[in-house]
Image (cartoon, rainbow, N blue to C red):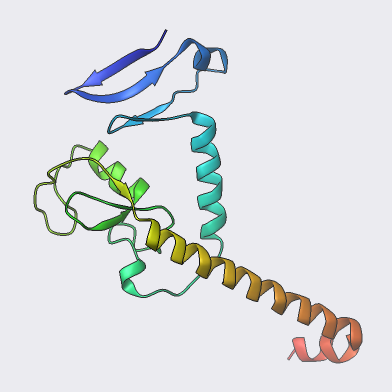
Length: 155
């Protein structure tokens, strides 16, 4: 049987008997959206993997809260795009204003910015491919001429 804890009308957690049997994991609830703990863990792992790939992007693709390139960008009711975790944390702390403008948010509903997300995923995929190619080329150079490669790398 699900139980809901509520503060000020906002859901703070949702617990089910099934979650308790799995070791007490809580499903995350924010803005009426419930995320399964397993899905949250998978998303966190994917975000961590994406952060490993360093890409240079224009400022428009950088979250104004985290100052990092977007991984899971969402649009707030103000029309500004933020990293999902950053704006959710902002709202969970009780802030109901836009972090950039300070204007009141008309809604706490967040909409995925799929165009930005897809563009940055493509950039990361290209960069990952480029890095892998560079690594393979270096390994080939070492295999072809190990002495010359070791001399040039020590300079």
